[in-house]
Length: 248
Image (cartoon, rainbow, N blue to C red; front, side, top):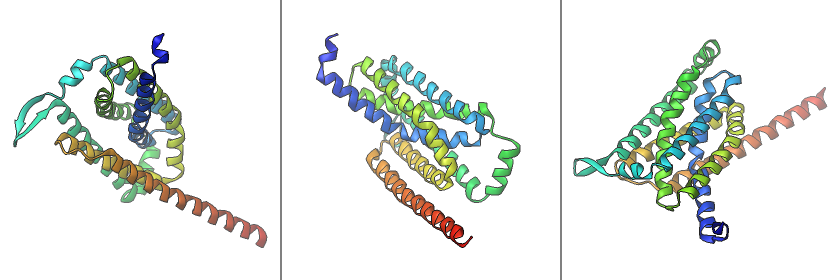
């Protein structure tokens, strides 16, 4: 039980947990968006299943550290750049995010009425949604675990941080999804964030690292502006309601 009195261990756990939660923001947004096409009664179960799969994948990856590190080893060289399996996975995941984000934006902007009618008549397939979640879980989990490996070599600490972070995400996924459903403009912000993350993953795959702080600052600032817009809209709605009551 000496580890209970080890300040370095606790510092590593707190730092890594905070990092995993921050890295999980894009996972929550993706879950909320991809499950929005499901029937309302099935969205929450799909979100929980998606996060449970993310937890399982990350724990499996953590106990396979040697294999994960091996994924960063070059397998061939193209145009004077070494390419590893990690690069291929990140590029593939980034392209998938660009495709998914662009498709959802098209449905919301160009074909909103048709898309809503289609979703009412034929909700998205539960299996298809879970399949998309698994694909992105692999990408997000791989990126998360490689980051964790760079911070500490204590596997139990890494597993504990991942479990805590997933638990926080399970608690947050429902409210975030409900909020996005109530405020469609936040979905557009989320989709824009997914496009940013997709570009960052592709850049990482080509060995051009974009600091995540820039991405998180951009989405945090946009979220702040959108929050102010929502507050202003609610204030105008209350003012109109009060005027109607006074006039009545």
